[in-house]
Image (cartoon, rainbow, N blue to C red):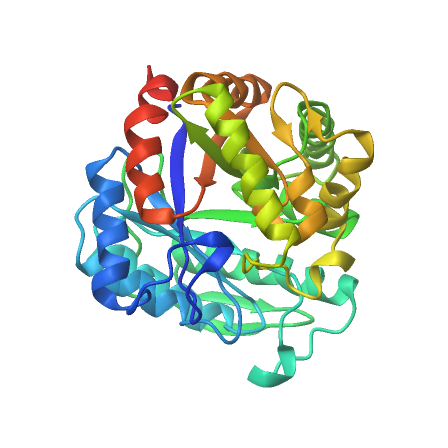
Length: 354
């Protein structure tokens, strides 16, 4: 299978996300469409659209962008507490039908502003048990008719989704991505997800997690195609290695002064995956060949916690090492987002697709 290369579109109310350019109308339909079309023009497969209360609704943005593009594939982040499974399965199948099979789905179980939209996820075990039911029901609704499911968290009776998702070759429905590093999260991924997304850990950490998830899939009696793996990470690419590191250190200096608006959610520090990234700095400022851990000290969160830094050749070499471990889905980004879509599309992607 050829690797998949996605970007990130910052559907944010406030401009300047992670050092992005602050411009008027940054989240207008025209601006967001310019990102999606640039992705098409510069060799990308699509982009992740993040989710969270207080941001533009992710599914609405994805629908608008799909309508204005021809090959762009939105990886739509959604929350089981925000959607009910049958409602989401129908909406996603409809968009998949209208876009000729371009929908991808990233299911998120991390905490959010739950009370604002009427959710009460409870503790971690409750949250991930609900996510597992959500994934089971959605997949069944996409592939079966007259589905009945009575679980602890969700129920459907004699339910059939119309129209159906696009079926093409081995593709029977939109691919289901999932993240999370806790024991509860990994059990959900091993049993029910199509792709487990990792944040930017060193190679040894990713290798260990892949081996553990493969073992878990066997123990849990996984009923689907083998679990695939993806990497969500910041890639800071410049014409030369020296220029890349100079720019990376300058960015971190601005972060240390509080001049760069990050995206670290107050709940992230309690997340197992986020804490794994923050703990990396104790091992060194640069791990493997060029994994920069210092941004996490100054406000970098999620995919902004660690960066792969270097020339296009340096970063491609590192990404190929992740690929050799079994990573086949890549979600990359750097700011300012739109110029970096073009730079990395033109300089980095040809090396990775060669």
